[in-house]
Length: 160
Image 1: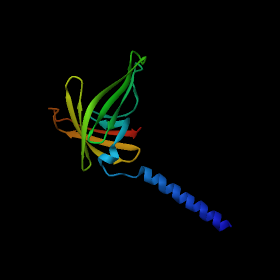
Image 2: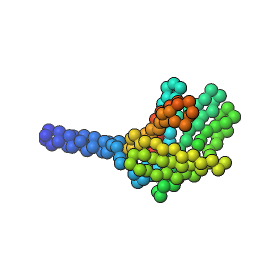
Image 3: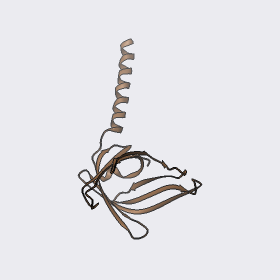
Image 4: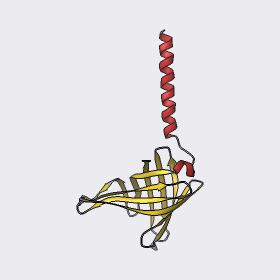
């Protein structure tokens, strides 16, 4: 009887551990795996110094803000910025259309803003699980004109 209980407990423990590992194991960087809504939760990097921020980001006058990316099937989606103004009293949400593509572990996002400004950014997908997406971008001695460089790592949590 003791062996039966031990075997049942061992089987349950192995099954539970296997399920939790599956939820957080790295997935291939594909459209099927990135489709959903992702909320920024942390950002860190360096430019003139190192920095690290958790989101929603709260500033010194009680404004907070964060953004999400919604990646739909077919390479389209939206970026939405959420925040407050007027010392945190008024909430807002602004959305813009985007296109995205994935090639290898590179995610390229093109966003069309209200004033017809188009922004294209490419990110290295450092990690992709069912619940978390980590993107990395950098530039060394590039377009800044002063030979400056920067790095940025952004961590997103899947919310849908």
